[in-house]
Image (cartoon, rainbow, N blue to C red; front, side):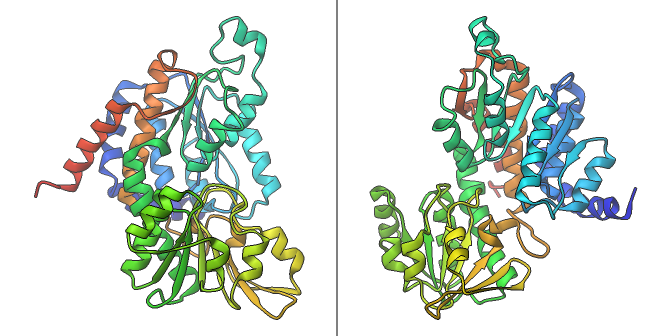
Length: 402
């Protein structure tokens, strides 16, 4: 084992020891082999918690071909997974073009099951669908893919808009799970975003003015944890019902453009493109910090800021100062990419939340492997029986009755 792989192994050992839900299902999969004869193609953040999920799938007989997401890959984890015999593409320093090539390499390996994050693999699969095969009753559309899972809000949106009706096989959207919404999106993302701001910038939270753009489950959690740490929090959401909820939860609510001049930090958490646009950037106070918690780097109009910049200066890893022609400057974190896994020693969501979330992944992938033909085509929620079984297991693991 190389020194890099050994470092990854040491980090994963701690994570693995705190993921009892996956430990139990790993034993079950090792006995039952639900993924025998299947190649799982994965595009997901390559960090220690994901490694434990991949170990679990491999124990169930799966061949793994994987890549990380742009900017979040951890090289020691890649080295460790390769030592386990997995085909893993990607490195921390990859450009966006490199990332696209890595995703294409996973697709080119012709997986039979997808484990997707942002629907990148699903989009490539859709481009390979043979209408004649579909017409002849081939549920894989000639791709050999029987189905898969999608992790994120952003990917779920793509499946239901850009890719609606394009896939003849089922994709279980993990983000539709109420368990994931509460445990991972609200509490884990909320906690990790606050931790990431503190770790990357070393700025205080208490007394600082924050605007959270988006009041879905992630936005709710971010606002809650910022306020718990003493932050002054406002919320912007274009959905009147979510704005209503935020107001009744006690937050200042308004349009993002109107709140921009008040904000010291703006955090996007919508999953949609074009949130912090030119009018918002033009209204920001001098020294405002911009951060994105969404999966894709499209919520903040970074190209507009770069085009306007008089100068750009890298101040620290994941911190960039952009001086604007009117004398203001803006601080951009992680180039507008998802900040939770950016900067030095990124941790991401809590171990317990990912034990829950990755158990949803594991059991949903097992359902695909065993029963894809019984599921409808296209995006769909996690089956109710899986949700309830995992809720019972999580309550027991937490000792919630004590």
